Amino acid sequence: MFDALSARFAKTFGNLRSKGKISSSDIDSVLDEITSALLEADVAKEVVDLFTERIGAQAAALLPTLQAGSNQAQAIFDVVNSELIKILGSEGRRIRFAKNPPTVIMLAGLQGAGKTTLAAKLAKFYKDQGNTPLLIAADLQRPNAVTQLQVLGEQIGVPVFAPEQGNGSGNAVEVARDGIAFAQSKVHNMVIVDTAGRLGVDDELMDEAIAIRNQIQPHEILFVIDSMIGQSAIATARAFEQGVGFDGLVLTKLDGDARGGAALSITEVLKRPIMFVSTGEKISDFDLFYPERMASRILGLGDVATLAEQAKKALNPETSAKLEEKFARGDDFTLEDFLEQLEAMANMGSMGKLLSMLPGAASMKKQIENFDESEIVRTKAIVQSMTPHERRDVKVLNGTRRARIARGSGRAVSEVNSLVERFSAAQKAMKQMRNGSMPAGMPAAMSGMPAIPASKSAVVHKKKSKSGNPAKRAAEERG
Ligand code: GDP
Image (cartoon, rainbow, N blue to C red; front, side):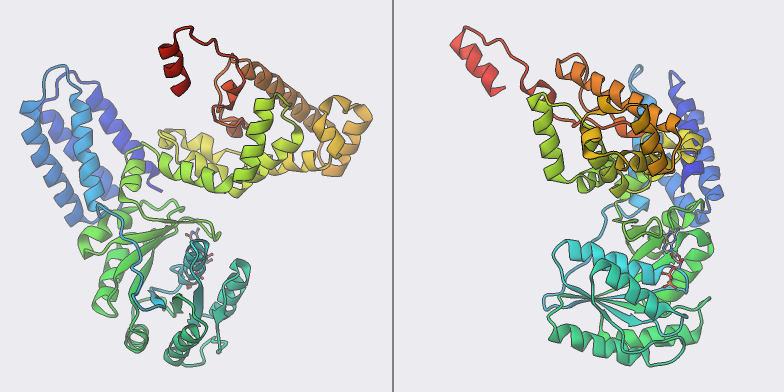
């Protein structure tokens, strides 16, 4: 998503940066470029006009104040960035918890928008933060919606209130009402109500949503919208706003290759904040919405903040600490450690997604698309086919052992050889690094090689000469 838009922005600012002195006609052509890029990305015309008007006015005021030799293009870029953040809602809004629990969140939207999936994602997200959510299966229309929610609930360990099997029968208002009473009796502090959508906006859909709303008086109504539906997203959102009404939006399927216009238009048009985004079918493909991070992605600066957060979440602190200690002690990094690292990487989700958060990712689109996700799985299978002894000491891996490992993992002997070779080289590099000859934190994950803990450990036991001057020594020790 946004790849085409990011590439256009990158090109426009690349051109601008190549100019020594920026004139007002340069600004005009930047505005023209931005206009056509946004319209092509399906951004609503009214939003494009507003956006370029604001940038134009600020750039015109800024231009005479820019000194020759100063980074003029950067100043203009900063204006665009801050206006983009504004269009996206400035500050992300978060769920407001009710004074008297449970906090009731109702989901509304068209069929297939991703409500049921989202209900589970939200429940998992808030459960992980120490809440006790209950899911209510009040989509009694879409075939299998109730079962789907039950399966998801089981998967994430969240109870699902589902007295009706749905598939076109049962009373959704009663289910929602009874579900809230059940949540109160079981002291759940949060309730997420999945409701039925239809293929298009119609009276029946809206009447049911309104009846549920009136019955349960939710604290938050979230309108869930598929970002792949392009321009019609705005009309649908307007219909829901005028019908059931909503407090915030959730954009789903941001992982698709849609042009992304809805995301950029909806907040400005409807004056409602985007609160969450869904970026895939897996429960973990979900995040809070951060306007500044989204702007950064659109402008080709990547989303390093999210990347760092995901890495932190995926790495087990105990494993990392153990590895750091080992490293500091001077012990060898073994294939057992490598296996733990591979598992952490798998927890971080798709490599393609991670790589796409790097600055300049739009220009590496092809390479990212070609990244072979199964490489990690294959490597893991090879390491798992080794005995603990072999994992700790690859030197024992003779031809017979390698052939056995290849058979056990269903891979070719040449692949086992290649892994062992690469691993031994990495192990050697780490030894050198420990002696202070290479920087720590090598992003080995990218090359399928063991990651090195990015910490001070590389220098932990490097002897330092201490100053003979007590004041200087104290300063050194403080440092
Ligand atoms: P509902 O009818 O609104 O409850 O929609 P569902 O939750 O059943 O989702 C419809 C389809 O979209 C399912 O196949 C989901 O797996 C899929 N889906 C939901 N969210 C996402 C997302 O963010 N990205 C992708 N690629 N698929 C999604």
